Length: 183
Image 1 (cartoon, rainbow, N blue to C red):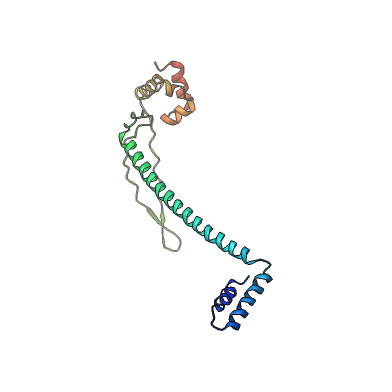
Image 2 (image 1 turned 45 degrees about the vertical axis):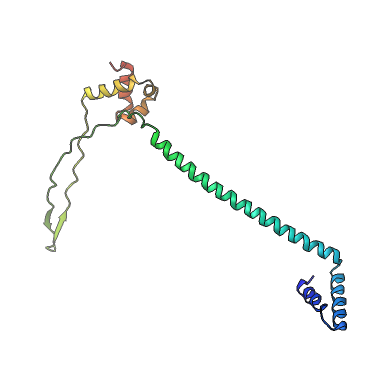
């Protein structure tokens, strides 16, 4: 149903001319009948739409209130997490299971040498890159690390391969120390 047309026809019923007002009322009645409804049904739909609008406004207000409460709770949660992080004592320092750093070896790179090719242009040869120094630890240092690991029941339960990864030793060495009992 065209509600704008119906509203214009109903506005014409207030006309001072009786013929015009009567004609507008008849046309409005015809429009309602063509839509397959009655005036009662039309008014009932309008009342329901109005009550739905009031319900929607109430629901929107409730949703807005819940969103604001949610934001406040999130802020409080964040503040509590920060307080908890400040209160918690730092964990015990972990056992150092890394290979000790080797003393840096300073080597001078040899200067590039040049030779002449057949066209009398210099050809630069790159010097070979220095090889990294071998990392050897004294047996006493290895024994100290293995005693520390095997005395800790939590670390002693780890596999030879995992302990080797953490200490920088080979799994064979870790297994030998485990069999020896880290004596």
